[in-house]
Length: 536
Ligand code: C2O
Image 1 (cartoon, rainbow, N blue to C red):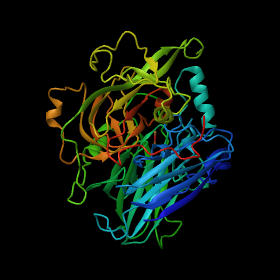
Image 2: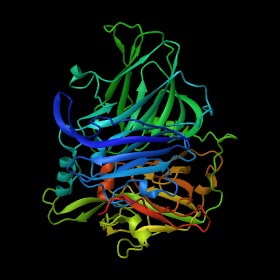
Image 3: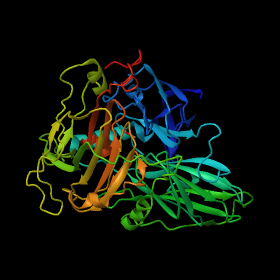
Image 4: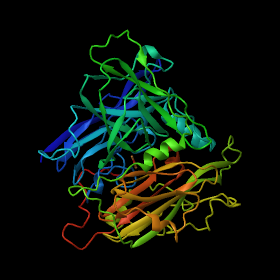
């Protein structure tokens, strides 16, 4: 194994999209940012230097960070942010993972433009468990706002109302040839007839789940969230913010130009960005003037299309890559996720109230000292360990919503002993509106053992759990008006954030943290912090 070194200069760059120019925060002047390449077992050293006026931190989304929580990145959870003019060396080893992940800023709304791919190749000499594609490409889906994204969210916080939606979606940084600024072109995937291509698709958008399609071509899904799945063919994938999906496309159409589309999926009756991002798959030898073959996009509320895709995902569960699903459960947790409404006397537009979000009715309050530091150094008064195991009210999805929609606030964590096995049922409250929440857990992969609509029934539903080959991932959609059950083993000591990866919901408080104690064994403790860990 090798050491991979990267320099990330966080800097402002004037960038033109949709025929107008604005300064954006980038890494090394690029949008999307540079791809980090490594192999399983490599050590990755990334020096992040902050040249902008904002505090910055970077998260390596999906990298397990075994015992190296100091390099995980969420601001005020595992580290204090890197202040303007300062730097921090992220130092971690990739253990037991290979596939596609991504990195992104984990503070404010900077991840709208501060993100890029992480490509982890298998160990040297270890083949993929599927036929080797001839070529590979990274495909990052995201959004573009004409205005400054920090201004967008600050305005929303002030008013207590929902923020504006983006002005476009993007594929590898570009809204594409069907946007209202076609002259800027778009991403072009050049292919040779007869060859196969692995696309590493990443949803880096702040607030939108997306459908992804290629006209005239089927995709074979082989991996999600850097875990191998049983291959299956589909013409549409659905991908939530925080998720990654590897597909193989056979360039079997001989010639021509084919539209690639990313369009919104939102099964809630709420404001949504309707813009479809487009790109082009272009066979070599095809004339630039030839007509592009188009494809339709699923309607934004095409829940059956999304379900069909999600329900097809199964762990590969081969001899070499077994699905290590915990069979017994030490901690059985039931968390409600959803929105609420709290009083806000200063919110004029919101009529004296504001939208909030919560888990088990707790709206998480960000601390001003990083939780991991408080935990490691024994700093008192930063968090409490009373995060509830169950919601404080008797939850009934189909019943009338509680008369009082207010949530309570706190910096509460749920404490787990080292190596405990956890079953966590995440239930959408749908109190204001049923909505799909892509929940991301830092520091672990988990198995999605069950899912359903309406209320979770603790007597009946577990009987139908898949404990054999459930998909393993780091971000899972809680179905609108339904629930999902996950299982994981708490084998990573530290403090691990869990939150909705729709950034607006995270801002509103749909987040919490698990504190996992050290084990007693020689390699079961959190390592000490690096010397240059940023100070608050
Ligand atoms: Cu990709 Cu805590 O996030």
